[in-house]
Length: 276
Ligand code: OGA
Ligand code: MN
Image (cartoon, rainbow, N blue to C red; front, side, top):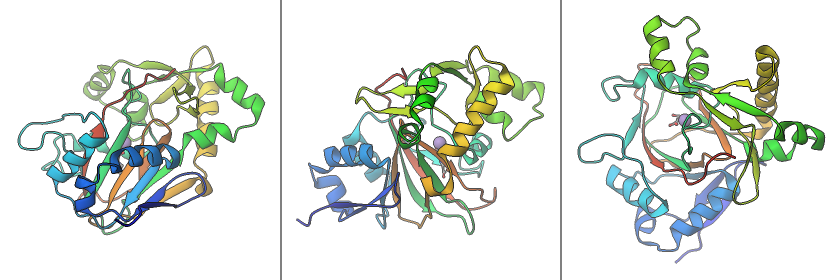
């Protein structure tokens, strides 16, 4: 069998996997462990031209870890990332994907990784962007790393939703606030020994600091973590599959039209590590 390789797509995040087709995705017993290792090293992996169906995506995802269940029916592990409410009843919330974020920051244990496969793409926009928060921490000056290591941050759904809707109705606000906020250290020290910044749309304020001052610190770190040269932007073609390591990578969707056909089928790998 041909050797599978991963070719870097930018200096800090992203690699394209070459040499995998659908057969190999399901039959190569060494592929899952290889994928997880390379994912940890590169943060995001791009597989082009796979055109997998839902059953194949679920089967491969299950080889990588525990897969979350969202719905009912034939393929309950599939969540559709689309702004079309006919395809996803909670489409409104997906506008939150337009801001840099880490999935599951208000959960006890954020998910390990997300897998998207493109079933339809936007005519314009709709790229997905990635930035490594491992690299963002590693590249901070040492004394700033020390300062960050002492800070704790409150994450909330409200903070994330406010970015797209700063005048919520009382009902919207009540729904947002029904999800409890969560406090995390600003720096996640992983079991692997690596460290990453925990930033993004859900980051509300820094514990024990004036709200505006804390916001300014968080905003500044986010801006510096996501400067264009630190970002890999994935331009989707139908049939692409992309996996990202949600523990050490920020991501966001570039704007696309609400009536666009864009339709990503998503599987989610359950978390295995609390932020600490
Ligand atoms: C997600 C997400 C980005 C995109 O599925 O968690 O943020 O480009 N998706 O659709
Ligand atoms: Mn997301």
